Image 1 (tube, rainbow, N blue to C red):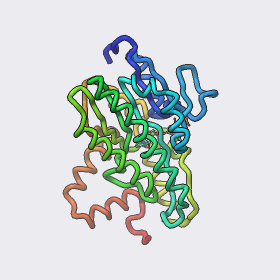
Image 2: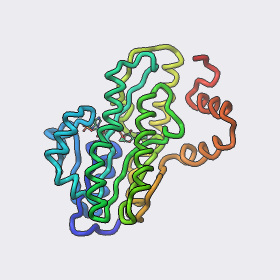
Image 3: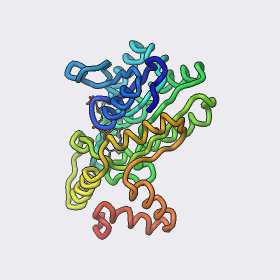
Length: 269
Ligand SMILES: NC(=O)c1ccc[n+]([C@@H]2O[C@H](COP(=O)([O-])OP(=O)(O)OC[C@H]3O[C@@H](n4cnc5c(N)ncnc54)[C@H](OP(=O)(O)O)[C@@H]3O)[C@@H](O)[C@H]2O)c1
């Protein structure tokens, strides 16, 4: 990636691990001043860190108040932080639902508003919302995750309708890639053979996916070439073949194939 203008500022939420760490490292290499967020800055590696817990609305407000300069000056802002929650919908507590929506949708949306406003006023900037391929292929037993990511993608798509020419919004929808995402995932109550089978398949897909660095490279290249709009990254099967094949099938067969992909094609709910 070519050298960025004199230390332009890039902010990456959830920059301590997985995709966030890989993207932050790539932006640093490209010459950006990178500020990362984490819930635990005291134990973070060397670099510029700010504390942020996106699942806590009061902390999001505090962050926006205390770091108005970052929100106003970021040339690149990447809403990456995220975690999942898995379990049968009937077992979800109200606080599980709220926490997922705060972390994955309301928190990022709250932060994006001043960021987008400043980019529009300046006439340039790049806002990336890390959504998921689950927007097209929902992950079984992750209803709030899927709903929040769909909301985040719709936010990006709406901002694309408002953004002037110099302001870029990227609706990033990766498929599975290898990180500690599933290890950090929370589980609600609920058990059973079908649930456990889906869990095994979810984990298998993630572990056999490309490394986070490969996904980061796709995003960094897109930022560099001035991409705007939806961007997919991941295995050829998930990002190309499955969407193409799904488009050919009637809804009922498509759902069947989707369940088979999670090992429960023949298993009754
Ligand atoms: N891995 C996949 O297959 C996959 C596929 C599609 C989309 N995604 C999306 O990609 C993004 C990155 O995921 P990843 O796979 O790289 O996972 P990861 O390695 O678990 O990293 C997630 C990051 O999010 C931060 N985070 C978690 N909960 C948070 C909270 N309440 N407040 C603030 N930050 C929080 C963590 O930071 P601290 O622990 O340092 O606070 C961590 O750095 C997520 O949005 C995820 O939904 C992942």
